[in-house]
Image (tube, rainbow, N blue to C red):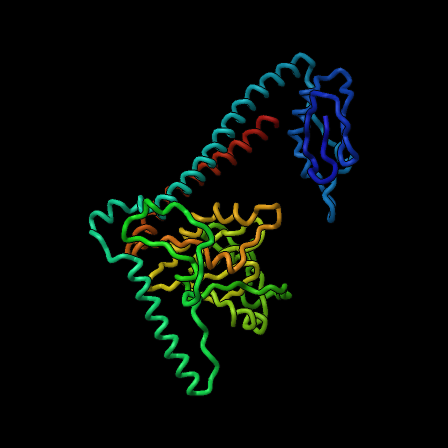
Amino acid sequence: MIIGRKGSIGAVNFSNAPCWPIDTTYFIDDFNGLVPEFIFYAFKGLNLADLDTSTAIPGLNRNDIYNQHIPLPPIAEQDRIVEKVEELLARVNATRERLTKVKEILKRFRQSILAAACSGRLTADWRERQGLATATSYVWEQAINKLEAEYEASCRQTKAQGKRKPFKPTCLEDFELAWELNFDGLPENWTYVPMGKVCLKITDGTHDTPKPTETGIPFITAKHVRDRSVDFENALYLTKEIHDSIYARCNPRRGDVIVVNIGAGTATPAFVNVDFEFSMKNVALLKPNMEILDGRYLELHQLYIKPFVFELVTRGGAQPFMGLNLIKTIPCIMPPLDEQKEVVRHAEAIFKLADQIEKRVVDATARAEKLTQAILA
């Protein structure tokens, strides 16, 4: 029997084959005639991890284990207890395995909903009732032409005033698609273009590591961004001066979408639904042209393509990184604006149901864990 001394402290394991325990473990290889499996289960019921009193590296003191007490029934009863415990644990483990499978099923279910949302299948009935809308490609071209005219007029005005040239919207630049997908099945009034052609601005947060303060303006990093949510409760804080210097270039606002662009969470998107200012690091900012692209739809779209992007940026074993040039060339599948909103409405209703099921699974898993400890106790 092997017990974790450092690192995984208090973890109790049983080896049915000879092994070499290392110096970060304690071990028992002589059970003095007692039933080894009974001792194993008795030790697992002690919650040895709670004995950690170290302040630096977690550790388990041998004397603390020596001071623990376990019940010691007759040998025959030890055998009966082991038999019953293993019978009960087998049932609990089977339940936990089924719950784990449900989590995987929900994960695949959500991805299938995203695929249906971004292919037109989710809103096929709605489209049939509404009739054929104006082709998105035409609306997109009109929006680009309008922006081009506004930008040129602004350039002429600032030049006449001797002022600095205005910011050129990202969508007025030229981009090629990063990859080709099979779009043959798209509804005829849908289109697809590089992401940069439907966003007014695509940039990222600071590349430096500013010193946080106890209070101030919220500052988030990649670890604060989850699928479709931002953890502002655990955000860091910056002084207004440092925040303003970052925000001048990267200014997330309500309706925008932010995406993790480095690390294990690369390509994870979240819609900005707050009105206060915040700054970012290791997170990219996508400002959709709201005349043609709904921010909530963009979030769903980014979630749909997340597996494709993550596979692309993890080839070769390097740390995942999604640069701005790649983001600007990612294919963006676009239905008409009204249908985008309907896609979001349908998808969010289904996701809400999936979230409720997942919560029940999480609660059931927690109960199974408690049941395991109750059996061992």
